[in-house]
Amino acid sequence: MSTRSCQGSDSVIKPLDTIPEDRKVQRTQSGFDPFEKPAGQVKRVHSENNACINAKSSSSGKESPKLRRHSSPSSPTSPKFGKADSYEKLEKLGEGSYATVYKGKSKVNGKLVALKVIRLQEEEGTPFTAIREASLLKGLKHANIVLLHDIIHTKETLTLVFEYVHTDLCQYMDKHPGGLHPDNVRLFLFQLLRGLSYIHQRYILHRDLKPQNLLISDTGELKLADFGLARAKSVPSHTYSNEVVTLWYRPPDVLLGSTDYSTCLDMWGVGCIFVEMIQGVAAFPGMKDIQDQLERIFLVLGTPSEETWPGVHSLPHFKPGKRPLWNGVS
Image 1 (cartoon, rainbow, N blue to C red):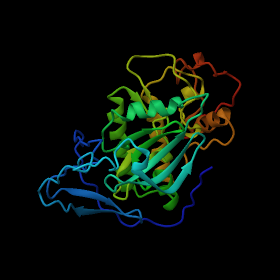
Image 2 (cartoon, rainbow, N blue to C red):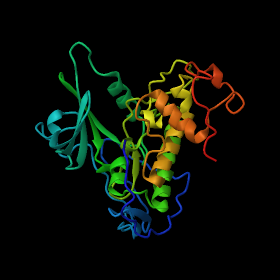
Image 3 (cartoon, helix red, strand yellow):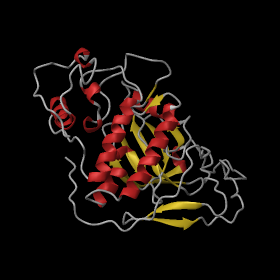
């Protein structure tokens, strides 16, 4: 259980600037191009002590020159995108069941990158989660979505090269226990919803929202990451798996066996993360199994019935009368 003590205090944070809902941020994949920002634009700088300050952009009003995909002129021995020797591993950041993530550096342009090295099994081939993540992220370009720069395929590994972001929301909350300042909560929540809106408009469900999958840059920019469980939902489907989303952030209908879900699956996760940012501890930190997770939810929201939740009795794992009745917290 990730429990954060209520010690330490936030610095005073200035009110957030208004960010237009329809503001689109354009990014190019191959050149690692910086965002183009108009002169004098105010940007949000997110400090290490959980304080947001306003800083004028250093833009001089002139557009920065575009970075080319390859250095010019290019020799046959020059580092190129799509090649394993084009990136230098600096340090290991983490290791999972099928992949290891490294902090790296591009030899093409000197940019820091994150290298997700996926081990390939000769009998099993490329993990479907890696194929899904790469195929979806290739078509997603947004300020609040982690950017996929490059894909490197060798006989032993598949490497996904991402932009480097130095921390995630889970680490950030651990560093600032007791809950974040309301203005910081609002800053992160806005960006989370903006990134989700972008993928939902393209009929894509993330299906694994949790603080560990929300990257935070040193300027306070939040980016959705880890699309291994994401799924394109171009047409209504009743064949989705209910084994999605980390237990603490999984909605009750999916816990009860529903496979007929849509964007509400991600929105439940948003609500859980919102509460966690405010109070500093997870909203429903189940410790045992699905049954324990449901009980923690019903203890707060009340045990559902056909009157309060029409159709709940038809869910595969709902067993009326076999769990305690809670009225919820008023």
